[in-house]
Structures are given as structure tokens and as C-alpha cells.
Length: 193
Image (cartoon, rainbow, N blue to C red; front, side, top):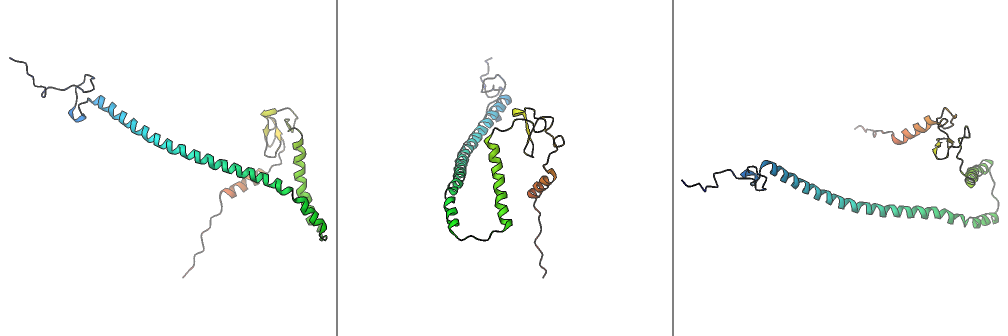
């Protein structure tokens, strides 16, 4: 008898060469190789999608950086603008001195003085070094100090409001914060026919 040369009737091996039998519905691959092939294909698709998304996102930060730089330049110009406004002020003062004096109310004269005094006090404090001591016990705290909402610096044991008799009104501040975050919503008035 002659050996049969019929290759179509016998089981075929996987075309990737793993040694398992192939399935004709899976393009001549075994189930394991087919799953691996599918996962590679999925990863390639995801990588392409991620690359497209990354290129789109890369363009957005450049635009945001440009916008951020423009905002910084505008802020610097605005900060420089008050300095320019202060220079012509003596000319206005000279013109006001030449003009006839106007009657001055006692209430209006105290308001500019009160407005000028808060500006003067921070300038005096800024002239010296910033205090790095606890305001309660005068212990050196350096960078480990805690700045309270009342504006003072405290050590670890005096950082709480109860420990240093804080003057900051937490209730009012939180109420204002909640009111600003949650505006009152009212429906429009219904007109009857």
C-alpha cells in the first residue's frame, strides 16, 4: 500500500509555528495565537488613538501657555500702570491748589485719612524682616510656623484659634463663602391670563 498524500483530510498545524492544530475559521491559527494576534491589533489601535489624542493635547497646552503668557503681560502692564498714574498726581495737586478752596466736610476728610493709614502700616512692616516667631509665646518657628486667618504667625501649640484667642470671625466668613457659592434662585413671576 502506498502512503496517502492527502493533506486536506488531515488536521493542519498552526501557521505561526507553535505546534498546535489550526482552525480554518481563525485564518489558519490556533485559538491561543489568534487571541495574541487580536490583542496586538487592539493595542496598536489604542496606541494610535492615544497618539492622536496626545498630539491634540500637545497643541492645547501650547495655546494655553500663550494665553497664560498674555495674561501675565497684561497683569504686569496693569501693575506698571498705577506707577504711571502716581507720577502725574503732583500736577493735579498743583492744579487743585490753584483752584478756589471747596468746603470740606468732617466726614469726607476723615475717610481719606483712614484710607491712607492702612496703606502706611503695611509699608512700615514690610520695611523690616518678616517675623518668624510665634505671636503668643515668641518662640522661633521659622518655616514651620502656622499662619492663622487673623494674619499672625504661631507655633504648633498655639496654631488653633482657641489657643491664641483668634479675632477672625469664622462664622461670618463661612456664611459669606456659602452665600457666594450658592446664589438664591427664584422663578420668574407667572402672569395669569
